[in-house]
Length: 229
Image (cartoon, rainbow, N blue to C red; front, side, top):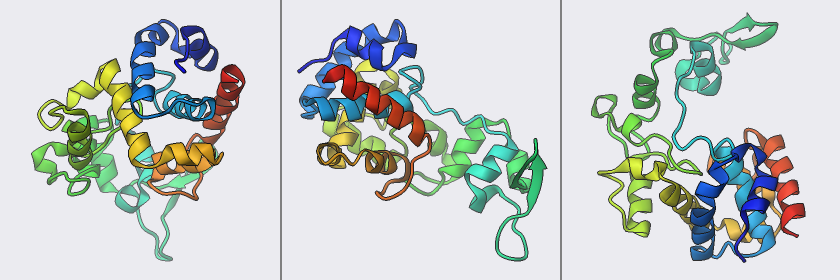
């Protein structure tokens, strides 16, 4: 059953006027990929709501500080310690990983960060190809990497290899998210009530972990179930 604009705003109040823009696209995407029961729709809207900042972000923000790089991807950007861990520094009263020289050189340069962190994986080429930036996360559940763009493009009959920016448009942002959901069997997890595992698959690629922002995801899910009941 399609959701209404009033329901969407009750779940994602910070979406404001964007709710009306995205609503038709969300309903078409959910219908196409069988996200059609209250529990499936509640889980889907909660997850895309969290991932997109309540429909406000359609592309990945890679404007990281050196400190953020060292703590998000320590294996690449933190200074190793003799005991096999990472050297620590005190940042606002908290122990944080010490950035290495690469992190310091990349800090505040989103395009260079993308080309470095996503290089030679997810179907991307080396940093010099620019694939990391070209195929950075886009859409309501961020499609990331050339191979994932190509797979989504085949499913949606779009040339996302040539036009990755299409995933920033409401129609394809929603449709690509629903395709991701379907391709990874997330309707089944929703049916089983395994909401945390859904966030884990979206955030880490596998079940059994706690996704970043789990508390916000859970709060949106509980609200969505009440609204859609």
